[in-house]
Image (cartoon, rainbow, N blue to C red; front, side):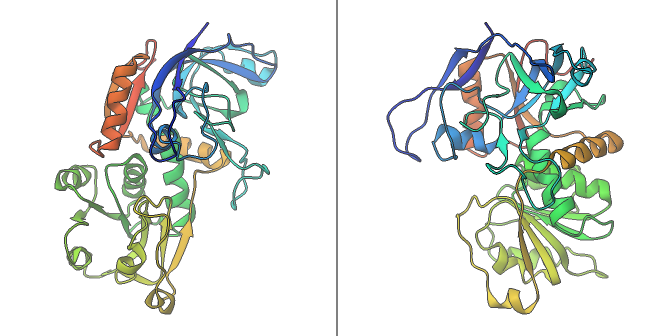
Length: 360
Protein backbone atom coordinates (compact mmCIF):
# COMPACT_ATOMS: atom_id res chain seq x y z
CA UNK A 1 0.00 0.00 0.00
CA UNK A 2 1.24 3.55 -0.72
CA UNK A 3 2.72 5.69 2.04
CA UNK A 4 1.94 9.25 3.07
CA UNK A 5 2.65 11.73 5.88
CA UNK A 6 -0.17 12.99 8.12
CA UNK A 7 -0.44 14.53 11.58
CA UNK A 8 -0.80 12.37 14.71
CA UNK A 9 -3.30 13.30 17.40
CA UNK A 10 -1.87 14.24 20.80
CA UNK A 11 -3.50 16.17 23.66
CA UNK A 12 -3.43 19.95 23.44
CA UNK A 13 -5.49 23.05 22.85
CA UNK A 14 -5.67 24.84 19.49
CA UNK A 15 -2.76 27.24 19.18
CA UNK A 16 -0.81 25.48 21.93
CA UNK A 17 -0.52 22.01 20.46
CA UNK A 18 1.97 21.07 17.72
CA UNK A 19 0.89 17.79 16.20
CA UNK A 20 3.75 15.45 15.32
CA UNK A 21 4.09 13.97 11.86
CA UNK A 22 3.56 10.28 11.26
CA UNK A 23 3.92 8.00 8.27
CA UNK A 24 0.69 6.27 7.31
CA UNK A 25 -0.47 3.92 4.60
CA UNK A 26 -3.30 4.87 2.28
CA UNK A 27 -5.54 2.56 0.26
CA UNK A 28 -4.38 1.36 -3.14
CA UNK A 29 -5.94 3.73 -5.69
CA UNK A 30 -9.00 2.52 -7.58
CA UNK A 31 -9.97 5.32 -9.97
CA UNK A 32 -13.56 5.72 -11.11
CA UNK A 33 -14.30 6.49 -14.77
CA UNK A 34 -13.29 10.18 -14.62
CA UNK A 35 -10.44 9.88 -12.13
CA UNK A 36 -6.68 9.70 -12.57
CA UNK A 37 -3.94 8.28 -10.35
CA UNK A 38 -0.87 10.49 -10.05
CA UNK A 39 2.50 9.21 -8.86
CA UNK A 40 3.77 12.32 -7.11
CA UNK A 41 7.20 13.73 -7.90
CA UNK A 42 7.18 16.74 -5.57
CA UNK A 43 4.97 18.50 -3.04
CA UNK A 44 5.29 21.86 -1.29
CA UNK A 45 4.42 23.39 2.08
CA UNK A 46 2.10 26.34 2.65
CA UNK A 47 1.46 28.30 5.85
CA UNK A 48 -1.87 26.51 6.19
CA UNK A 49 0.10 23.30 6.84
CA UNK A 50 1.79 24.91 9.83
CA UNK A 51 -1.59 26.15 11.06
CA UNK A 52 -2.96 22.61 10.69
CA UNK A 53 -0.18 21.27 12.94
CA UNK A 54 -1.17 23.93 15.49
CA UNK A 55 -4.90 23.12 15.10
CA UNK A 56 -5.53 26.68 13.94
CA UNK A 57 -7.06 25.75 10.59
CA UNK A 58 -10.73 24.91 9.99
CA UNK A 59 -11.49 21.20 9.73
CA UNK A 60 -8.10 19.99 10.94
CA UNK A 61 -8.13 16.20 11.09
CA UNK A 62 -5.92 13.12 11.31
CA UNK A 63 -5.15 10.34 8.87
CA UNK A 64 -5.40 12.60 5.80
CA UNK A 65 -2.14 13.24 3.91
CA UNK A 66 -0.80 16.78 4.35
CA UNK A 67 -0.05 19.40 1.68
CA UNK A 68 -1.98 20.78 -1.27
CA UNK A 69 0.74 21.56 -3.83
CA UNK A 70 1.86 18.76 -6.10
CA UNK A 71 3.28 17.66 -9.44
CA UNK A 72 3.45 14.11 -10.74
CA UNK A 73 2.99 11.60 -13.53
CA UNK A 74 -0.41 10.11 -14.34
CA UNK A 75 0.22 6.37 -14.09
CA UNK A 76 -3.33 5.06 -14.41
CA UNK A 77 -6.75 6.42 -15.24
CA UNK A 78 -10.42 5.59 -15.36
CA UNK A 79 -12.21 4.45 -18.47
CA UNK A 80 -13.47 7.83 -19.72
CA UNK A 81 -11.74 9.64 -22.57
CA UNK A 82 -11.25 12.69 -20.35
CA UNK A 83 -9.24 10.59 -17.90
CA UNK A 84 -7.39 8.42 -20.43
CA UNK A 85 -5.95 11.46 -22.24
CA UNK A 86 -3.76 12.22 -19.23
CA UNK A 87 -1.93 8.86 -19.11
CA UNK A 88 1.86 9.23 -18.78
CA UNK A 89 1.72 13.03 -18.72
CA UNK A 90 3.42 15.22 -16.12
CA UNK A 91 0.70 17.27 -14.49
CA UNK A 92 0.09 20.09 -12.03
CA UNK A 93 -2.77 19.53 -9.57
CA UNK A 94 -5.46 22.10 -8.88
CA UNK A 95 -5.14 22.39 -5.08
CA UNK A 96 -8.85 22.43 -4.29
CA UNK A 97 -12.37 21.75 -5.46
CA UNK A 98 -15.75 23.47 -5.29
CA UNK A 99 -14.94 26.64 -7.21
CA UNK A 100 -15.37 26.50 -10.97
CA UNK A 101 -15.48 30.03 -12.38
CA UNK A 102 -17.56 32.49 -10.36
CA UNK A 103 -15.69 35.78 -9.81
CA UNK A 104 -17.40 36.19 -6.42
CA UNK A 105 -16.23 32.96 -4.80
CA UNK A 106 -16.81 29.20 -4.55
CA UNK A 107 -20.10 27.97 -5.97
CA UNK A 108 -20.23 24.88 -3.76
CA UNK A 109 -22.37 25.45 -0.65
CA UNK A 110 -19.58 24.10 1.57
CA UNK A 111 -17.00 26.36 -0.01
CA UNK A 112 -13.55 25.65 -1.41
CA UNK A 113 -12.15 22.29 -0.28
CA UNK A 114 -8.35 22.47 -0.31
CA UNK A 115 -6.33 19.27 -0.31
CA UNK A 116 -4.29 18.22 2.68
CA UNK A 117 -4.94 17.58 6.34
CA UNK A 118 -8.60 18.51 6.77
CA UNK A 119 -12.04 16.87 6.83
CA UNK A 120 -13.16 18.73 3.71
CA UNK A 121 -10.89 16.91 1.24
CA UNK A 122 -9.54 13.37 1.61
CA UNK A 123 -6.63 13.95 -0.80
CA UNK A 124 -3.20 15.33 0.01
CA UNK A 125 0.10 15.59 -1.86
CA UNK A 126 2.61 14.52 0.82
CA UNK A 127 2.11 10.99 -0.42
CA UNK A 128 3.42 8.55 -2.98
CA UNK A 129 0.18 8.69 -4.98
CA UNK A 130 -3.01 10.73 -5.11
CA UNK A 131 -6.29 10.13 -6.94
CA UNK A 132 -8.00 13.15 -8.51
CA UNK A 133 -10.71 13.90 -11.02
CA UNK A 134 -9.24 14.46 -14.47
CA UNK A 135 -10.84 17.90 -14.59
CA UNK A 136 -8.49 19.10 -11.84
CA UNK A 137 -5.30 18.59 -13.87
CA UNK A 138 -3.20 20.91 -16.01
CA UNK A 139 -0.20 19.84 -18.04
CA UNK A 140 3.01 20.90 -16.31
CA UNK A 141 4.94 23.74 -17.98
CA UNK A 142 7.93 22.13 -19.66
CA UNK A 143 10.43 24.78 -18.54
CA UNK A 144 9.91 23.91 -14.86
CA UNK A 145 11.63 21.10 -13.00
CA UNK A 146 9.63 19.16 -10.42
CA UNK A 147 10.70 21.33 -7.46
CA UNK A 148 9.69 24.50 -9.28
CA UNK A 149 6.44 23.01 -10.54
CA UNK A 150 5.37 21.97 -7.06
CA UNK A 151 6.14 25.45 -5.77
CA UNK A 152 3.36 27.40 -7.44
CA UNK A 153 -0.16 25.84 -7.39
CA UNK A 154 -1.70 27.24 -4.19
CA UNK A 155 0.51 30.26 -3.62
CA UNK A 156 0.48 31.05 -7.33
CA UNK A 157 -3.30 30.83 -7.45
CA UNK A 158 -3.69 33.01 -4.35
CA UNK A 159 -1.28 35.55 -5.84
CA UNK A 160 -3.04 35.44 -9.21
CA UNK A 161 -6.40 36.36 -7.76
CA UNK A 162 -4.99 38.98 -5.39
CA UNK A 163 -3.03 40.69 -8.16
CA UNK A 164 -4.81 40.10 -11.47
CA UNK A 165 -8.39 39.87 -10.24
CA UNK A 166 -8.59 42.01 -7.11
CA UNK A 167 -5.89 44.69 -7.28
CA UNK A 168 -7.38 46.37 -10.35
CA UNK A 169 -3.90 47.51 -11.34
CA UNK A 170 -2.18 44.62 -13.12
CA UNK A 171 -1.19 47.09 -15.83
CA UNK A 172 2.23 48.08 -17.18
CA UNK A 173 3.62 51.21 -15.55
CA UNK A 174 1.51 50.98 -12.38
CA UNK A 175 3.21 51.12 -8.97
CA UNK A 176 2.51 48.05 -6.82
CA UNK A 177 3.64 47.40 -3.25
CA UNK A 178 4.00 43.77 -2.18
CA UNK A 179 4.38 43.31 1.58
CA UNK A 180 6.27 40.55 3.37
CA UNK A 181 8.52 39.50 0.52
CA UNK A 182 10.01 36.04 0.99
CA UNK A 183 6.76 34.15 1.40
CA UNK A 184 5.45 32.11 -1.51
CA UNK A 185 2.43 34.30 -2.35
CA UNK A 186 4.36 37.57 -2.15
CA UNK A 187 7.09 36.23 -4.42
CA UNK A 188 4.56 35.06 -7.00
CA UNK A 189 2.93 38.52 -6.99
CA UNK A 190 6.38 40.00 -7.55
CA UNK A 191 7.00 37.69 -10.51
CA UNK A 192 3.57 38.43 -12.01
CA UNK A 193 3.98 42.17 -11.54
CA UNK A 194 7.41 42.29 -13.14
CA UNK A 195 6.16 40.15 -16.06
CA UNK A 196 3.27 42.62 -16.54
CA UNK A 197 5.64 45.59 -16.65
CA UNK A 198 4.61 47.05 -13.29
CA UNK A 199 6.94 48.90 -10.95
CA UNK A 200 6.98 46.54 -7.97
CA UNK A 201 8.19 47.58 -4.54
CA UNK A 202 8.47 45.30 -1.51
CA UNK A 203 8.65 45.32 2.28
CA UNK A 204 10.44 42.90 4.57
CA UNK A 205 12.01 42.72 7.99
CA UNK A 206 15.22 41.46 6.35
CA UNK A 207 17.39 43.54 4.03
CA UNK A 208 18.79 40.37 2.49
CA UNK A 209 15.30 39.40 1.29
CA UNK A 210 14.80 42.85 -0.21
CA UNK A 211 18.12 42.55 -2.06
CA UNK A 212 17.06 39.18 -3.47
CA UNK A 213 13.71 40.64 -4.52
CA UNK A 214 15.51 43.40 -6.41
CA UNK A 215 17.46 40.74 -8.31
CA UNK A 216 14.09 39.25 -9.30
CA UNK A 217 12.96 42.59 -10.71
CA UNK A 218 11.65 44.66 -7.79
CA UNK A 219 12.37 48.39 -8.13
CA UNK A 220 13.25 48.65 -4.43
CA UNK A 221 12.10 47.90 -0.93
CA UNK A 222 11.97 49.04 2.67
CA UNK A 223 12.31 47.48 6.10
CA UNK A 224 8.82 47.62 7.61
CA UNK A 225 10.31 47.63 11.13
CA UNK A 226 11.93 51.00 10.48
CA UNK A 227 10.09 54.06 11.75
CA UNK A 228 8.69 56.10 8.88
CA UNK A 229 9.28 53.40 6.26
CA UNK A 230 6.40 54.79 4.25
CA UNK A 231 8.29 58.07 3.78
CA UNK A 232 11.35 56.16 2.60
CA UNK A 233 9.22 54.28 0.09
CA UNK A 234 7.61 57.54 -1.06
CA UNK A 235 11.06 58.76 -2.07
CA UNK A 236 11.62 55.69 -4.25
CA UNK A 237 8.54 56.17 -6.41
CA UNK A 238 8.86 57.61 -9.95
CA UNK A 239 8.76 61.41 -10.18
CA UNK A 240 6.02 61.27 -12.79
CA UNK A 241 3.91 58.86 -10.72
CA UNK A 242 4.74 59.54 -7.06
CA UNK A 243 2.10 57.28 -5.54
CA UNK A 244 1.13 53.63 -5.26
CA UNK A 245 -1.70 52.31 -7.41
CA UNK A 246 -2.25 49.20 -5.30
CA UNK A 247 -0.92 47.23 -2.35
CA UNK A 248 -1.02 43.43 -2.28
CA UNK A 249 -0.81 42.47 1.37
CA UNK A 250 -0.71 39.33 3.47
CA UNK A 251 -0.16 40.84 6.91
CA UNK A 252 -3.01 43.21 7.79
CA UNK A 253 -1.96 45.21 10.84
CA UNK A 254 -1.47 48.88 10.03
CA UNK A 255 -1.54 48.45 6.24
CA UNK A 256 -4.54 50.78 5.84
CA UNK A 257 -3.04 53.46 8.07
CA UNK A 258 0.35 53.39 6.35
CA UNK A 259 -0.93 52.57 2.90
CA UNK A 260 -3.50 55.34 2.69
CA UNK A 261 -0.64 57.85 2.83
CA UNK A 262 0.99 56.29 -0.22
CA UNK A 263 -1.93 55.22 -2.39
CA UNK A 264 -3.54 57.35 -5.05
CA UNK A 265 -7.14 58.44 -4.53
CA UNK A 266 -9.20 55.36 -5.26
CA UNK A 267 -6.19 53.10 -4.67
CA UNK A 268 -6.75 49.48 -3.73
CA UNK A 269 -5.43 47.25 -0.97
CA UNK A 270 -5.83 43.61 -2.03
CA UNK A 271 -5.41 41.53 1.11
CA UNK A 272 -5.03 37.74 1.08
CA UNK A 273 -4.00 37.20 4.71
CA UNK A 274 -3.73 38.81 8.13
CA UNK A 275 -0.71 37.30 9.82
CA UNK A 276 -0.18 40.26 12.16
CA UNK A 277 -3.69 40.18 13.62
CA UNK A 278 -7.15 38.91 12.64
CA UNK A 279 -8.37 42.51 12.89
CA UNK A 280 -7.26 45.83 11.43
CA UNK A 281 -8.50 49.40 11.50
CA UNK A 282 -10.13 51.16 8.58
CA UNK A 283 -9.48 54.85 9.17
CA UNK A 284 -11.40 57.96 8.07
CA UNK A 285 -8.56 59.38 5.93
CA UNK A 286 -8.82 56.22 3.82
CA UNK A 287 -12.56 56.79 3.45
CA UNK A 288 -12.00 60.39 2.35
CA UNK A 289 -9.53 59.25 -0.30
CA UNK A 290 -11.82 56.48 -1.56
CA UNK A 291 -9.32 53.75 -0.69
CA UNK A 292 -10.74 50.25 -1.13
CA UNK A 293 -9.80 47.12 0.81
CA UNK A 294 -10.61 43.93 -1.08
CA UNK A 295 -10.39 40.50 0.48
CA UNK A 296 -8.95 37.77 -1.71
CA UNK A 297 -8.61 34.03 -1.10
CA UNK A 298 -7.29 31.19 -3.29
CA UNK A 299 -8.96 31.17 -6.73
CA UNK A 300 -11.25 29.33 -9.11
CA UNK A 301 -10.54 26.45 -11.48
CA UNK A 302 -10.72 28.93 -14.36
CA UNK A 303 -8.21 31.22 -12.66
CA UNK A 304 -5.95 28.22 -12.07
CA UNK A 305 -5.95 27.46 -15.81
CA UNK A 306 -5.31 31.15 -16.62
CA UNK A 307 -2.38 31.17 -14.19
CA UNK A 308 -0.74 28.04 -15.64
CA UNK A 309 -1.09 29.47 -19.15
CA UNK A 310 0.56 32.75 -18.07
CA UNK A 311 3.44 30.93 -16.36
CA UNK A 312 4.01 28.93 -19.55
CA UNK A 313 3.89 32.01 -21.79
CA UNK A 314 6.19 34.12 -19.62
CA UNK A 315 8.47 31.20 -18.66
CA UNK A 316 8.19 32.22 -15.02
CA UNK A 317 10.10 30.19 -12.44
CA UNK A 318 8.76 30.08 -8.87
CA UNK A 319 11.41 30.55 -6.19
CA UNK A 320 12.37 27.44 -4.20
CA UNK A 321 13.99 28.15 -0.85
CA UNK A 322 14.96 24.60 0.08
CA UNK A 323 13.97 21.03 -0.65
CA UNK A 324 14.38 17.62 0.95
CA UNK A 325 13.81 14.20 -0.56
CA UNK A 326 11.45 11.45 0.48
CA UNK A 327 8.88 10.86 3.21
CA UNK A 328 11.51 11.43 5.88
CA UNK A 329 9.84 12.89 8.97
CA UNK A 330 13.01 14.44 10.40
CA UNK A 331 13.82 16.24 7.15
CA UNK A 332 10.23 17.42 6.65
CA UNK A 333 10.16 18.71 10.23
CA UNK A 334 13.19 20.81 9.27
CA UNK A 335 11.17 22.48 6.53
CA UNK A 336 8.42 23.28 9.04
CA UNK A 337 11.07 24.86 11.30
CA UNK A 338 12.14 27.10 8.42
CA UNK A 339 8.53 28.22 8.10
CA UNK A 340 8.08 28.75 11.83
CA UNK A 341 11.21 30.90 11.89
CA UNK A 342 10.28 32.77 8.68
CA UNK A 343 13.79 32.06 7.43
CA UNK A 344 12.76 30.89 3.97
CA UNK A 345 12.87 32.90 0.77
CA UNK A 346 10.51 31.03 -1.51
CA UNK A 347 8.85 27.66 -1.23
CA UNK A 348 9.77 24.66 0.88
CA UNK A 349 9.54 21.48 -1.17
CA UNK A 350 9.57 17.72 -0.65
CA UNK A 351 10.66 15.71 -3.67
CA UNK A 352 9.21 12.22 -4.03
CA UNK A 353 10.06 9.15 -6.08
CA UNK A 354 12.19 10.28 -9.01
CA UNK A 355 11.22 13.93 -8.56
CA UNK A 356 13.66 16.79 -8.27
CA UNK A 357 15.54 19.10 -10.57
CA UNK A 358 15.15 16.98 -13.70
CA UNK A 359 12.45 17.51 -16.30
CA UNK A 360 10.81 14.92 -18.49
